[in-house]
Length: 130
Image 1 (tube, helix red, strand yellow):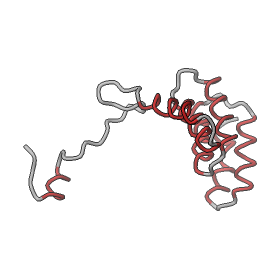
Image 2 (cartoon, helix red, strand yellow; image 1 turned 90 degrees about the vertical axis):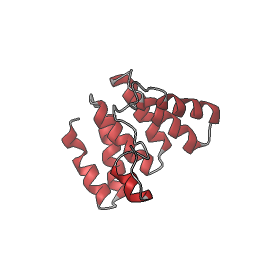
Image 3 (tube, one colour; image 1 turned 90 degrees about the horizontal axis):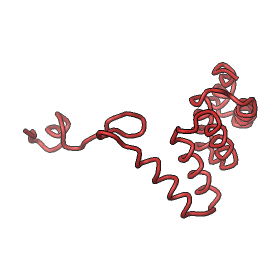
Image 4 (cartoon, one colour; image 1 turned 45 degrees about the vertical axis):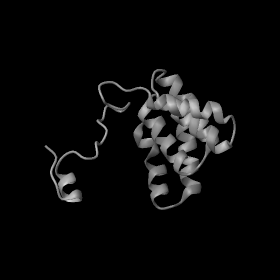
């Protein structure tokens, strides 16, 4: 299923028609999408709606499409937390997504915000760092 296949689900979610959105996202996930981004967008929706079974399906589909992507561990960990099962494994999975750092960048390749740098410090504290 292409990105267009989830447009109906996204529109339904924006209109707070969650029954339709759930049905459309489930249909999109069952169609075995080839895009990891599409799969993990469905996962974002499932996290917001606290749907652990859908999160486990997202993690499995993500592992099939992109085995090296660390987001599958994140979604599996969140599902375990929501189900209140195996807290040790959930913690391990969630911590493992934070360990993938290189050169000060997180797993998405973004630099973390550093408090105390730049003009925002001067505005908050009244003094400028050198």
